[in-house]
Length: 325
Image 1 (cartoon, rainbow, N blue to C red):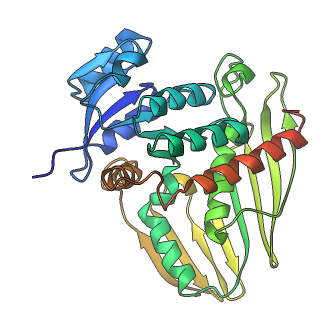
Image 2 (tube, helix red, strand yellow):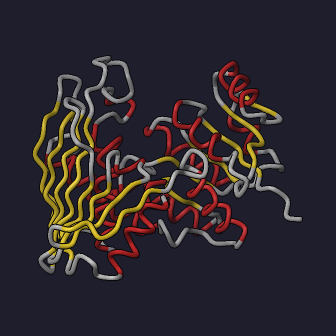
């Protein structure tokens, strides 16, 4: 019998609950330990999800020989240093999106992972969802003909707390890094490559972060992408792929959905609706576990170069709005 994969978790915040709930799926490993600089938070999280131990610092977790991989769920601005420490300790890493806050940081982590022969993966869980596996089958079957355009929205009105990480530039706040990364990455997923050109307009709020961004993407070969991400308005958060014969609509919330349909001409010809096995995070977790057990350094589903090219585009878009030099 195969020994369950043992996860260490750094940053027991909101999103970490989805990860821990995903581990309840029988195809996943177990939560072995939790680390947080807030010992009460670490203790409570460990108790809630039956983790045998918890730590009030990351060094002890990294020194734990009974940890097979580490999931990082800290705010964006801490991803680089935390992932770097894990890789230097030889611990495989599954790190929440965005992997870092700049392409330069991403390149450094990729080089470190390769040099230390240690697995590294951005936890962009949407790419692993069953609904997108079905969408890929529809695309491969050319049901909608030649794909020409991908459009998506990701928008909500958020609480106007300037100290919240979403609006705080010191915590790598801003809508593109937090939400727009899904729009951009899934457009890349559809075409299987990054855009040749990307142009952004948008709103930079009084705290100095992007609160709305409207983006046009040119993928070449007469293929395009458009998306809007924002903190100021609730939008219809679909993703639609338009082709020469019809379209595929991934229902809202497109990054966290179980439903999609394909329309040819004016007629719906297929529909997909499959509940998650657990929280939805289990699919990326199982992929990471599979890769680590096989000794891979990256997942073929989210390879290093895909993460890097998405980060390079986000650098460009943020630069166009004057957010970075």
